[in-house]
Image (cartoon, rainbow, N blue to C red):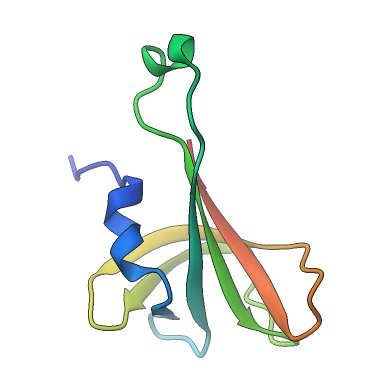
Length: 99
């Protein structure tokens, strides 16, 4: 069984470009948001919940789905990403959530 992904797998890649394998979309990882667990929760969860936040160009939205991303100067990851409400008009934000 492959190793479960953790925030530490992604923090070195903040501000790097994630390109959809075989596609035209390229997203920049802007944040690794780690949810701090309450003491009572820590014993109940298999991994620390976290969310990856990406930014892409406005107007060319990558549909929600499972994609393989090649990281510039790095590994590849299979991630389920979805576009999220973005207040800025110059970009489209996305998230990949891990529970």
